[in-house]
Length: 277
Image (cartoon, rainbow, N blue to C red; front, top):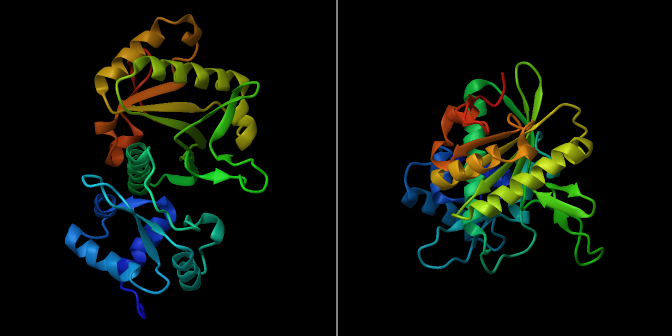
């Protein structure tokens, strides 16, 4: 039983409460520790108790181990910090026995969120709130209305769910963004998703859902830069996107890091843009 938490263990708990799932590599990126072996020892103590504060998701050989905060871990954080509330702590109520099929995509989305947080911290921009596609509302057991928090309509009775939705407080104003992480090489699937997001922009469903009265941008992060260029060039040829050049911004995943997150994006025409001015 852990009687006293080390400072780094508290940082692990708080990080899990923000990102919900983390690998050792991501904990290192957050500056909690420099080495896997040290993290392993810290996490081991958090896991090895009658009521563990942290659990590990079972994973296949070759996949990264992922950890999450338990109900007990959440309770400990609430006892330690008066400024934390249950609403802004992400934890898992039940034991997870198998990894998800989208584990690569989920890790990538969290990588992007970490890069966003670090960029905002360095530049003084505040992340007012965020939602990920794996954050849910509703209940399938009782009401059968479980859905992603990021779900918005793009047509009547048809919805999409952005991988990451967030609101920034910039020096000038608040800015809303819907972000998609595109893995793999299926360019046509990405084009179809761009069309659906464009329909949602015209419909104004995200503006209505979030009470946001200004225009917002969709951000497209591609694992393969070559696929990103193919998609962008296809959108350039489609009359449907003629007036949406500045509403879709593109960047390869390899360039999503540090302060560079806020700049170096390409619009549909290939012109370099910042996220805000």
